[in-house]
Length: 207
Image 1 (cartoon, helix red, strand yellow):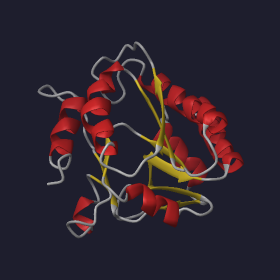
Image 2 (image 1 turned 45 degrees about the horizontal axis):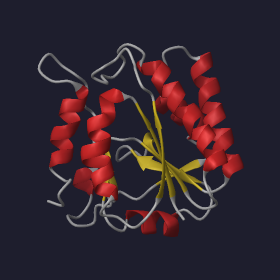
Image 3 (image 1 turned 180 degrees about the horizontal axis):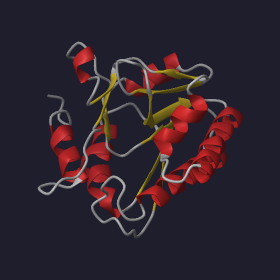
């Protein structure tokens, strides 16, 4: 059984309900563990604002908690600005038999913290605790900085079919198994979440 783990604040409630959860309803069954933070000082969820870094650390702590609650099987740590297509979790079960896999951020194969997958609880626990230690020792570094620092030589990358804004052009239409809306820094016109919605709208109904 696949267990997917998410954590979010009110700023991401729309993304969770209208995109993430909607996409899960069309996929094969999974066990979903969600951690919800009731308040925050960054109501629009914009990168780097308010308590954003603190929330990133909280998300990793939630991932650690989930390792104790999840049944045996594959663990998928996922951001909420991702939509999944049918077959995604079957592919992950087939691909990730051992070790840790992460979304490929770009053609160079840099790791993206929005999707981290593994089976071994001890290995995942070591990864998440190492990420927290890195963030504590390097003020200003976020979860992705930490992941790349501690896992660059031991985590593998998922296929391009687990796509994001930077890699979408590398796959054949119809082969995409998920889409992660990244590169959405807020500006004077739109919040980060508003930009994510526009990107996700292109794929949520299977277009």
